[in-house]
Image 1 (cartoon, helix red, strand yellow):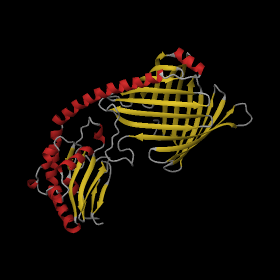
Image 2: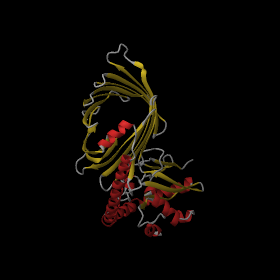
Image 3: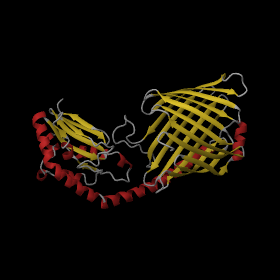
Image 4: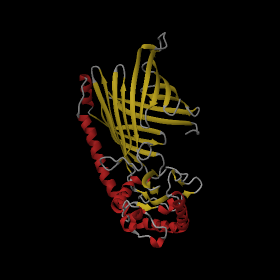
Length: 453
């Protein structure tokens, strides 16, 4: 990052192609010209020399335009790509692009007869609360106990070929490790070829922005055992062992494909993910037991002290809303959504008499104490009643931050070693004009319920 508007990114890769070492170093400069326009430029040094310049502009939140010109020195050709991208939903986008190319000595700047038109659809799925249409408290988990951090599915249709690609990134939160699996296929009229990458990413503890990579890459040129390093925005990959080069050469000559490399890649991914998942689960259980024994008692004590401070004011506000608006906060919980739902289904009746949390401490039946001691949730009925405001006659609960765990009477009851720690939910059970409602909200939501309607 050169300044708040300009970024410099550096990528690099070294691989083997046809028994020849191929290297590429690609620095890219990106400048935010305005709030909606970005300029970019880059140079690729090495076996494949390229010079690139481009511009992108966002017409609206969902519609964007981009244009890029690229000169390839080894081909002595100039390529220009124009693309329009339309977001259909928060995770699905469709783009159409036109690729024009021309030889340097050609009298015409563009040879439109050799242009390529392609239409692509991409689905980007991110995890935990990042999508507005996702249910509160949602965490996507993988087969091996990992958390699906990102998934991308792409399909591109051109005049001469079609491409399909799938990428998934999962994280083992107790190990500072992630796995990245990428699979792709290119189909042409007379042949098809496959490629894929399976990587393990290690975020080095204590060093911000530094990551190490290790894994396999499969392509038409064989299978490579690769290592990589990322420092800030600079990423470099190197092959340390090249496998199946002779078999890859024979396959290229026959225009055929082999399933052996695909199996090697998938087996490597499955075995590494299973081993990491087992170790991550073991470490997670150990950290959870230590958190419940050492940290949770202090949090519960401070929580009870906070409730004693707000009890009288919360009772006063609830009585006012009951008398004047027939609006009653029966109960409220904060924590893990599945635990809250199970607790409500198993221990709470549907009647107002059983649901209503007492105003006075001595009247509390403590029915929650035994029922929720092993659950990751806390009773926040009094802090929610404190959010009843006569101005506007509504319940308003906000924090000005992305979390409410620092509000009076709140704390995050989900252990930090669990992936759900990042997405506690608020459950509010209330009665309005004779009807009982149960609503769930994200931790980052600004909660507002009108009592006058």
